[in-house]
Image 1: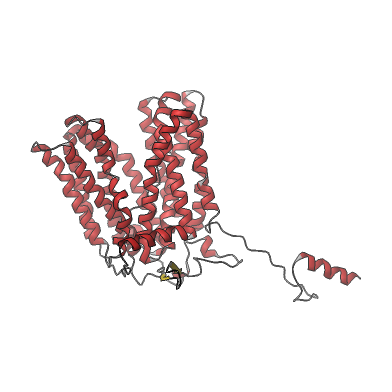
Image 2 (image 1 turned 90 degrees about the vertical axis):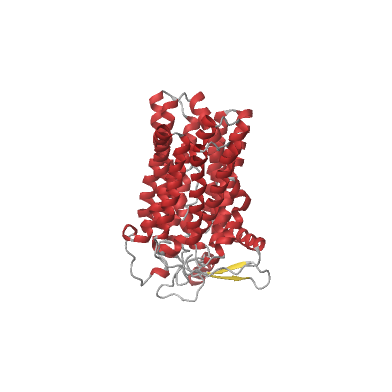
Length: 499
């Protein structure tokens, strides 16, 4: 599993039929959610809206919206994300190459450069959600973030041409772009609800994840070509142009935003409210727990993956990149399948099934032996399957989070999940590397397979699992309709009739 879960970087208007009221407990002050029946159905009878959330009461009686491919604003949003993410993939290769080949960066400087992109998420990732929930319109903030990132990236080739480029400069650029990205994701997640109808959000999420899969496959190849033709610093210009193109496309979206800002009680209390909701809401808690579990063990596996492939399985280095690319192709297939299957089976069922397949690739890698052709065949198959499973899970996770979170809390809940699910990556990588020093590579991989399997418990013990209706005995002609239906009373009644 070379990929970890990623939140789709996707306010919703007050007229949105899925909007849920947000209130506080009269005694504790904790947030409560006044939801429509499909949110917290507690009767013993089957509830089709829980089992198949793609069909909600809010959609009944409303005209079906046109397909997403025919919706201008969604096409603009999807294209903006695809271009921006592809540009970011180019910079992942171009910026480190610039530091190594032109600036002779030391190992410690490379470590700081690598960490600079993720530090903003740890420093104010939670606060970004509170900021997003205070906004009436999210799109202006998204455009501003893209423009700031564009300017920051453009300074790299300019500084290089002027002879001013240094490693600290690159680190500062990474910090600025990372900070803008944190704010962008916080605003973009609730913004999807304003552009996409409730019944099409899963398909929209699948489309965004397809973009990430395309970028993961094409981005490195494009980066290598640009570095070869233009040199590494000028290749960073491609990222700057991608941010600019994204901002212009977002500016062209016409869907009005009429989000009602959440009442703020101060930054810290707003952040705590998002944390509390993510932990106390049973569905959100299950998604959060599963996401953290999967990403921790997936990154522990990633930390030893390359060593294991080269030193233990003896996979040729030239073929490892191709195996990783298959994960992106699997992601495209997963996005295509999820968009269609969710309409028939609902996000809940897809999530329940997809989580069962997460350990397959890692388990296969840990147990793999035999000739090279067999190893390559099995790795190609399991890698493609896992790429699709990751996208299916992440797509449904994003759609369910939108569905289960009140409009006033979407920014904070998304920020909380992003903070936890992405923040645990560093811990997983450290744990995998350290543990391999003591027990070896293969045992660590098998431990990671078992650890990822624990995510099944989070999902299958949550309200996401459909509950079968209790069988109720009905009175038959000639019997007392008020007689008890339990077995002991039924036997006693029969005894009396016989006597």
